[in-house]
Length: 164
Length: 124
Image (cartoon, rainbow over all chains, first blue to last red; front, top):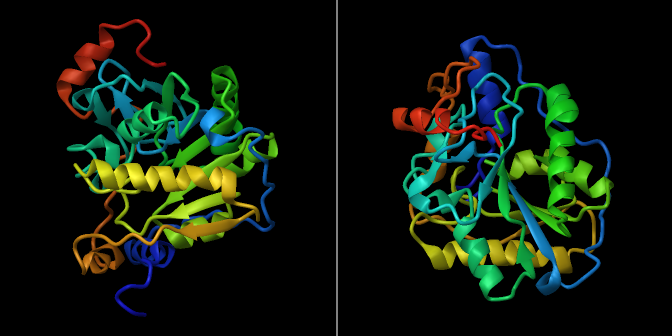
């Protein structure tokens, strides 16, 4: 491998957990190609939703817990950076996001793209959850239905997804 | 996140996913994805670099109009400012980097708990 090859997170995390004596982590491997839904209007006319799985919340909201928390927060786009907070089971990746939340919760960039009419408009809130959920069943049965409901409620035409 | 992307798309909602962990995204096969080769936690751009954040998010959103084949991952050709950052991400000899797992809300600051508990709609 060269120094510029992408980091192999799956190998690294698998080796670390094995060394620590943990049961193997069950990575999700899709076994078929995804469906592609077409955006039925120009991006400049589209209402855009967003989800960050970084555990972002706004001051005044209940923080996430770290035992498979499948709850969702709606973070208003008007939230100032100084009132953005993070609660995620892997805190080590959030050092910079706690200084500039836009690294992983792109409120500022999306507001600018709306002002510049690159996108039609934003939903009122960015959705957020704590992505460290170690149960695919709970993701499918709890988190995903709630996200469908929230995005439908927001009447979005398309969704930006930001995993951590 | 790939599960979320595939599920929304199957329901007719177009999605585009940003990603810094290429191998995880390749395994999950989301409908549309943009690869940002930054350390995890910086997928939407470098800290305090609004032009970088804006261009990364803009280029990603454009895939909603330009991506034509499902599962395609577009490399946004970004490079992080510290040349040897990958070595620290690849290390396998550290301890468990995760926090303890229980069902208590983990506020970033103690003060956040007081503010949240004073609001009736704090969970939404």
